[in-house]
Length: 201
Image (cartoon, rainbow, N blue to C red; front, side, top):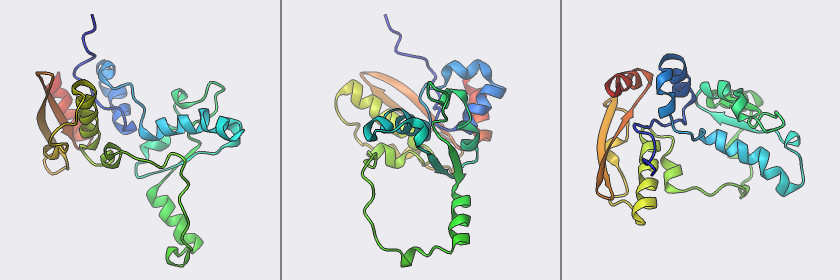
């Protein structure tokens, strides 16, 4: 019979955090979620599914991610994030700051640009996706989803505001699913994550 998975489970969407676990607490690797980062997931779709929809090869597409974190540059070099043919799923990562510098250097004034419709490929988002990049957002989205999959209804209240934000460094809460109470925690920054790993140990 299934035990229901590995606990405790850590999120795996931040490559800086994944690198930290791999390099300083390798015994915790089995506790990392098997999910890729959001750019890792989307890039896989862009290089493995999207080309078939438009009659192209993965090598014909250049995928560029714009991220605030420099650790994403290292992440796109991981061998796990390549197609079966060895093609990078994310070709380049530039930081938000680098993009702003490029826009400034090119003299682009957005107020002078004509409005245009967004491409509708992969442009729909869930509420969970909208909060993903906030501290605590990944945990909140995961808890909401787990609750809905098991209970077949939305978590009420749907917002776990007690784990949002970074003002306390480490925040904790509890959620009950099918009569079982689970402790959840959010650590802001690697320093607080280190503290949390020590508490878990």
